[in-house]
Every structure is written in C-alpha cells, then in structure tokens.
Image (cartoon, rainbow, N blue to C red; front, side, top):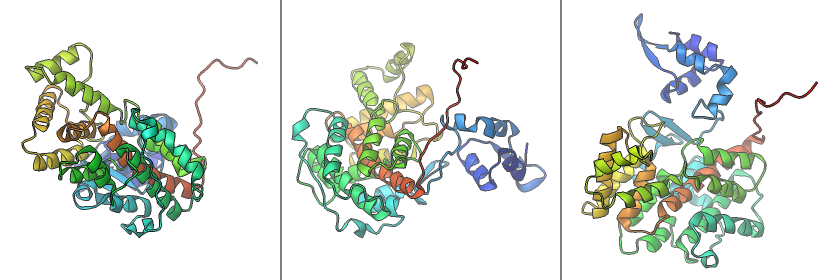
Length: 387
C-alpha cells in the first residue's frame, strides 16, 4: 500500500489525477488504519499503470490520454460540464445541452443567426440512416462558405446546421419543426404526444460519453484541421460499428428472436450455450448500471405504463440480469424506446448518432483550440531490418 503522494510520484502524475484514476475504478484505495481520514492505494494497481506501458494500455479502457472539459464519468453518474445528465435529460432542451457542451453555458442565442440546410433525403430513400447521412455531409460542406471557419462560436453555429441537416435526413423531410425532437417525433411517433419528451431525453443522454471510439475519431479528424462536417462523418463511420452504436441492431435482432420464447430465461441460456452473447447488458464504466439507461427506462415507465412492448423488454431485461448478473445499457434502453414507440428498425442507432453529433462537435471545438495534431507512435514488433 502507498500513500497518495507516494502513488502519484510512482506514476509521475498529480494527486488530483490519481483521484481521477480511483474514481474510474482503475486504482483501488483502502482506509488507512493509521489515519481515520486517510486512504492508501494498491501498489499492484499502480504497477500496472506505470508509464512504460501506460500508452499501450490507455488504448484499451485504460487511463486518460487527452484532457477534456466536456464530460465526466464518476461513480454511477455522468456529467456534462459539471451538470448531471439525468437532470438535463428531464429538464432541458436539446438546444440547451448543445450550447452547454459547445460553449460552456446555455446561451442558446449562439444559434440565432444560423442558416439551416435541410434535405428531404428522398434521393437515397431506402438506405440506412448512417449511409444517407455520410453521403450528404460532404455535399453540403462543399456549399457551406463557413465550413472552415474554425473559431469556437463559428464551429458551434456550423454544428447546429449539421445537427439540423442530419435531423432532416433522419426524418426524411425538408420541413423542420422548431426543435430537433419535435421534427423526429412527427416522423417517428406522430400520434404519441409523450414521445417528444422521450426522444429529447434520449438525444441528451447520448450527447457525449467522454473519449469513446467515435469521439476519439472525431478528435483525430479535427486535429488534422478538417472541417466539422468531416469530423461528424468520421464519428458516424465509427458509431455504425457493431461494438459501438451498431450494438443497437444486435439488441433489436435479439429481442425479435426472443419474442416467441415461452421461457425467456431458458431462451437466454440457450443463447449462451450456442456461444452467442446477450446483447445490451454490462458496461465496464458502470458496474452498478448505466445511468443513461436508468433515466430512459424510468421515463418510459412513467409515460407508457401499459405498453406491451415495454413490458416485454423489461421482462427480457430482468431475465438477463438474473442470468448473467449484468444490468442493461443505453443500447438496450434505446431499443426499448423504439419498440415502445413502434418505430421502424434502425431508429435506435439514428437516435444515438444524432445525439452524439453534439458531442463530436464539442470535441472538435476543444481540439481546434489545442491546435496540435494527434499522432501517436507505434511500437514496432515486426522483422528487424537487415544490418
């Protein structure tokens, strides 16, 4: 066991960074028997985080590799610029949260003079949302004279244009409602008034999640000096993967396969016997459950207490948790939302990507301000060169 100063010195970091490691579960701490208010830190954990291998481990759920003032994951909570996302999802608009992430305050007037680009999406009708979105972004970017104005307030305005552009693609309409969530609600659940609040909450809950793979891609693209449209294109390409936002498609498929099972526990156990995963459960950063999923599931229960689709999803969740001991994630909650609203397949991923667009633009703003390219080195392990 080491004291905080000893542990920080061993790692070559500040005591504050040590505390951040502890809050993320990367280093264990224990009460100091010699000091009622003191803590001691695991020497074993600290050795695993020594600088010699830190860079390699950092790429796989390891320690922080970039500084960011946007999102904090601490304990069982998620915060955007110090504000709990559970509260933001219930009490604020998408515009409020976008402004908070992009500028640090909810001064939504930064969008007042923004000219919006909208498209109907009919030219690529029938394609999944991600494909349609990625195809339209470079076209609009080429026609946007402010695409390469990389000052923070200008990027925020471009980000708002991009978010509305992608909303029009997702809703397949050129007629935007006053808010993003209202546009989506009119397309996806026109007869359900409560759907707007749930769509708004889902967008906010998905807005950012620290340095996940799509956010890292977005920052890399921004670090090269590319415009925000390219940043979002990079993020969309990453989030589509089935280990990221594309996990929602796996959850959708799993729920369809379980729909006619007489015994959900037995059906889930059979999946394990076949070597198949139970998708949408267990998040490495939230051992006590994904707070984003908790908020969305609670709001679904409040607004649709009699929904058969929701009851089925919750039965699956209960059976899975009892079987594997893992709690549901935001991926499962997004699918439960889409099923409850009786939307088309693919809506969970579209919701995820639209919400996360806010975070990608926020990371771009931070990276442009750093004005340095992200260029890690590789440790060569191939054939040595000849003498």
